[in-house]
Length: 165
Image 1 (cartoon, rainbow, N blue to C red):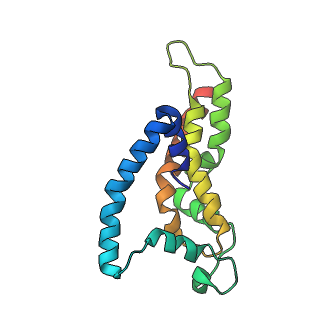
Image 2 (tube, rainbow, N blue to C red; image 1 turned 90 degrees about the vertical axis):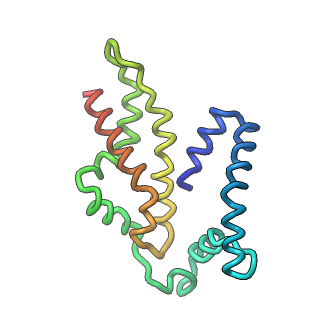
Image 3 (tube, rainbow, N blue to C red; image 1 turned 180 degrees about the vertical axis):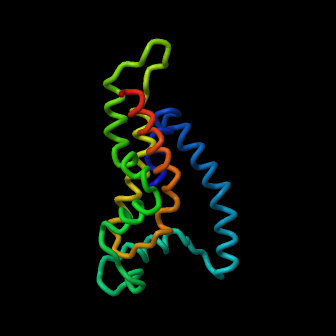
């Protein structure tokens, strides 16, 4: 979910054929050693990432990860309030500010803004937040992979707000 917009951008930049070739090469270089180590220690072929996804997707009460507690959909927004403080409004307004940045021409001597691509690349963080907010069992650590994109979105939003003001 987090990398899907990056993959789409790579397909656009490289073309589908080159993207697939590079993805297969990277996948083989990374997945083969991981599968070998996992298979050795588990004693059979396993895909831990798939097991994790299947375990956490269960929406039935009392099954899967829900055994460890559930939280309301806004749990992560409350955590982001605590962790990001003043950066949270910028994070939440980033898509609108990046869109507004497209409408305001660049000042003389500045390169033209390209917020459209930034919005696509940052959308993975918002997709991650939406995906994990929909799962009943929530832990703060589930958001850790998205924090760099959240902070980048907040920084770009602050920069765009300053530029268009």
